[in-house]
Length: 370
Image (cartoon, rainbow, N blue to C red):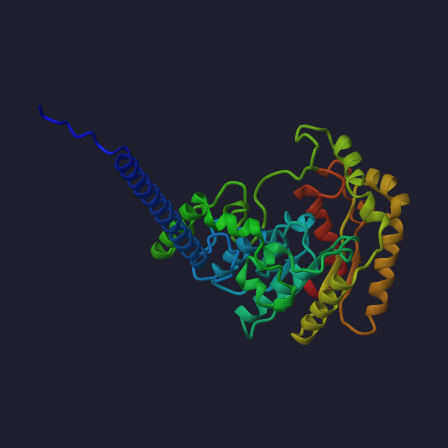
């Protein structure tokens, strides 16, 4: 009788254990390789995007930014000029609709509007130096539109838009730069950043401006001399269809804290004085224009601190007049230039018609510009 040998259950268990351990080991190795490959890919993407720097985060300046802010858009326009401007407009969004072409029709001088949204003396310092260094040997006159809040900027750091524009960032010490944030790194790791890097590289090769993302400022919003082409100025949280009265009422509501705070902080005052000193050294005496506000806004904001701030700014400029050369033209009231209360988008931003009347009055009070 043939004897059948039964398989040893212990051996079968050992085989299954060995196979299981092999599978686990293989799976772990696979996961490690996937993780290493992913890490290597992320490092490569981060390195490539950091080199191209499509958003100007690093400040390499090798390739053009695909999302210009006002500052970088205007640097591009300045670099496209064949001749140096003979006068420069500086200031905030209240000055962005000033037409250099209108001033030229009255003075015969070529000009450029370098005003930017929320512009401070730091922006003016950067643009004045950039223009002076780009066209060495030329001389510019300066029309500096000053809000009564121009000296209240509180941040201890350079505006992000200045840091992200290498041509302007060079005029600030490295200690003022904010450095990379976690969100900046994540942005550079994104698929969108990689796409934008390709756009930037392609634009560099072709010698044309890159495609600009729609949520940022583009050179196409401006005339070649920096004047703003289109778009109304509104208040955050207020419908674009809201009437002028609603927008005026919203203006002081958004700025109560600013009006009630101190009129000056150290950084903007220091950069303001450095800028005026540099202009004097270059042979120019800037025209400092205090910008208008709507009469209704003045009624509301005056008691909130606007009147006190207005007086403080005038007193400050009067004290500085013994040290520096400049002309002050106070056009805060529309009565000073025959402006219309209807010529406003909101409490502080005027239409072109009112701006032209303001410029006519300014030129009469600043004969050096004529």
